[in-house]
Image (tube, rainbow, N blue to C red; front, side):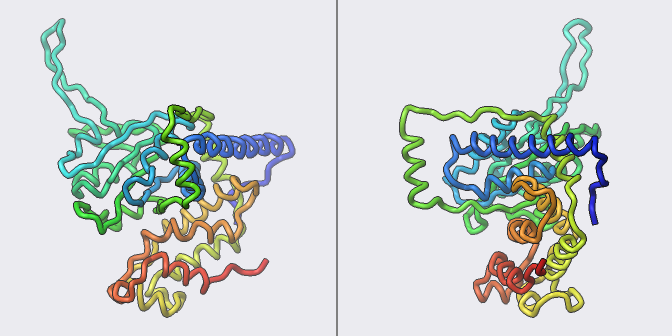
Length: 343
């Protein structure tokens, strides 16, 4: 199965140039980001994959793990309009979408409604600590993730692509958090976990941030080119055997999967991943393949992205909680159980 029709000889050179530009740009973005951010290679790769797929990314980590700085730096390298929303318990939906205000025309004295756009009208939106605000306000943002639009006072407003949301959340064990509903979590391509840095990387952070020298990331691309990259990713071919493996892997997460899931899934999982997870595995695999210099998706691409794509889609039951198991533990066992077919 392939999403790419066989190109003519005239198109082949153009396609190779586009792929080369894609790879060069990704390398340049990482180079610029690492002027400011130490380590976090996997997290940066996940964010860039989500950007190239046209999806959104949820970053989970404790305070002080440079989530906000990472997003701001990447937005700068991309040359995109960046906005940030600090989610708090008293944040209102209109603080996200914008609102209509009454303005008086000085010449005529007539009063008219004028729409003042909110921070959601940007290219890169950082939704900081999204689980610090009640569900009503969360939904104002999460509805826009799917529709690329919002409605204010009956008027419909489109958000111009590329539109990329990076939402950060604190672990739900911390006080004052409102866990995101499962249906809204499913709209995020990745749930990427930011862990503490190694001792050596932490020492580099100290050296980098406690002097008068301020490193600044430079812009290496623009919105129009990013939209071209998203088109290029969808043109990348994927073999039917790899697509079938992704389908079988996702179906194995469902405890009522008609015998397709192992016993530990039936014991510990309440609900498995949806078809959207399979779509994201293939799209993410296409972007990862291009980043790694390949022109086709492999089993390794699917397996490498399984955890960040599935960890927020696999809902565990009380048996898993009593045995102190997390979704990552279950997914690790699943990848061992469902090994990639031999070439």
